[in-house]
Image 1: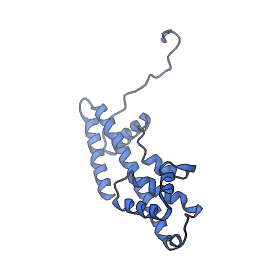
Image 2: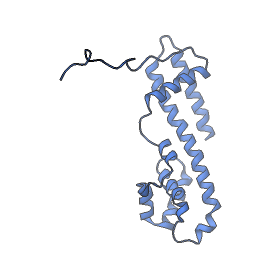
Image 3: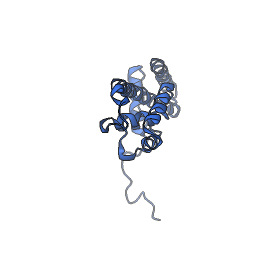
Image 4: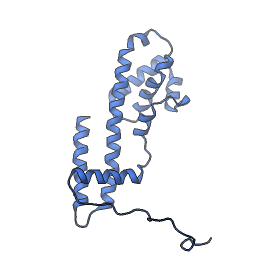
Length: 171
């Protein structure tokens, strides 16, 4: 996580350099900023997964003697299984295999498909492959420029006003 944080700082500096160029290389900076946002989300997800692992360790003795996953622990266990396929943490794959041995393949499949909506929604959102909202990318660019003291203002990406009847062509 420290390594990822250091790389993220460097990547943000590179975004600032792109926007400080004359003329600014805004398109490339937007792509890089989206990558920064994904990386920040991954780092936050790692922190939440670490807490989930700590909870698993705290309850390991109790879980050891139970055949079925306790209802109050299904979300944590399912989220760890689901996330193990989406992050590059070898230990999480080991945890997933152990949980599959304990609770069965059906439990694992239910976790992978979020049956019952039990997965931690924050972790799911942070590890999502969905495109980052353009406004979020723009806000990130502005924050990076403020932090790196780059004088840059975003170019409006959308028309300032909605089209009226005269500017919309009939079918």
